[in-house]
Amino acid sequence: MFESAELGHTIDKRTYDREEPGLRAALLDAQFELAQAGKFPVLILIGGVDGAGKGETVNLVNEWMDPRHIQTRAFGEASDEESERPTMWRFWRELPPRGKIGIMFGSWYTAPIVDRVMGQTDDEDLQQSLDRIVRFERMLHDEGALLLKFWFHLGKKQQKKRLQELEKDPRTRWRVTKLDWQRFKIYDRFREVSAHALRETGTADAPWTVVEGLDQRYRSLTVGKVLLEAMRERLAAQNSKPASVKAPPLPKIDNLGLLRHLDLTQKLARPKYKKELEKWQGRLNLLSREKKYFRKRSLVLVFEGSDAAGKGGAIRRITGAIDARHYQIIPVAAPTEEERAQPYLWRFWRRAPRRGRITIFDRSWYGRVLVERVEGFCDVSNWMRAYSEINDFEEQLVDNGAIVCKFWLQTSRAEQLKRFQLREQTSFKHFKITEEDWRNRKKWNAYEQAVCDMIDRTSTEIAPWFVIEAEDKYFGRIKILRTIVEQMGKVL
Image 1: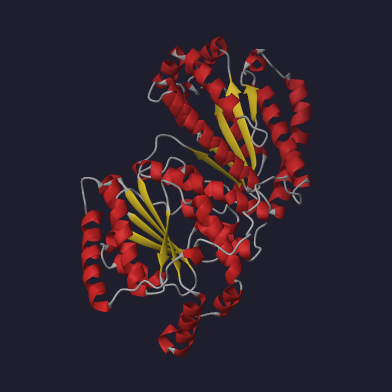
Image 2: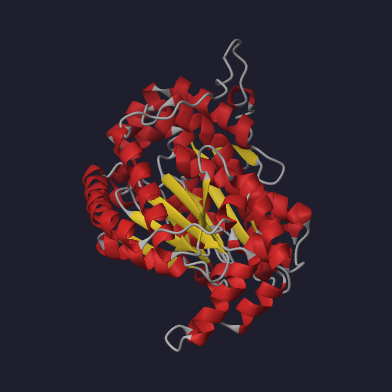
């Protein structure tokens, strides 16, 4: 894996001085074209051994190009805020938008490699982390990002010499720490684990470029030329999408479907509803205030459903049972310009709750496989791959301690019409009915098929869907509250 990066590559000063001006000019032109097009982001990951010139190279890239359109981020130990969320949360927050360049020091590779070298994890843990990284990087590629991964390498003797030179010079002495020498003592182990990580994650969508860091001129020209060639190639092909073969949706052959199989006649009388409401709200309140166990968890509630199915009323009964300081409601509408410049899951990753907190999504990331699918806002390959990306997102939430409850509220078509008409006739409910609601109603069958596909593909053992018969609002609200309490009780 590293053999060619231990040969002693060098570039003489005359060659460097001849090539550097043209390379700088070409990189600036490519960066300007990238910003003008605004079609995709460039994400550069920087990894490698200590003393191999990672910092100098990144500084040089910022010098050669316009730093106003480059966001450079360095990741060290996770903060308290970061450690209470899924591992990938802090990296999602720092993804560059379309038209920009992002550089990441200490990316999502650092912790899996270091933890395995130090014996804090085993081979299975490492492999799980690498598999997740591959899925994440595939998603970035499918979303249009240009991902460049550079690994700066030095042989063992070269690294020792480099660290000694830096330590000897008063201007660079501060860059060598005790930790650098401690890691040098286990160089062979670092090399072994790093080689495995690069082999497992060097894919066609996101290959690694291993750069020998011995000679500053060599590594500078190498990185510059790789970056320029990749940007030029991607800019030339920006109007074409990579081919993607995905499994087709399940064909609808008979008239039997999950939603049509529901018993919508179930009702709850008002007197019993009041008693049940008090009972389940009380239990939810106690569980949400449970200090010993819930502080190590979080609760994520997802509400989807047909228009006028009662999502808002159900959410109000939940929030009426818990402390307002401990929950946040996220009403999801069409993405903003800022959100459209990022992968579609970006705006939801940002909202992942800390431990001990509750986040309620009124509409959610499932818009990609519902509204965007039915309305044609994205093509088949995009919404088909979204199923596995959503499952991966929810798995990371659960692995970090989240209890994920997803609710689909369903009414009959006749009941929906009745509620639409009531909203039009009631002055304080006018705001609830729009032309879009009537348009969506005309596509009832298409949405019904999309919902069935969604539940089939994303109702998992760790984050199942709960389909709520919402024809009777009292019945639906109590079923939701009871389900939340039961799911929390199982985990806590």
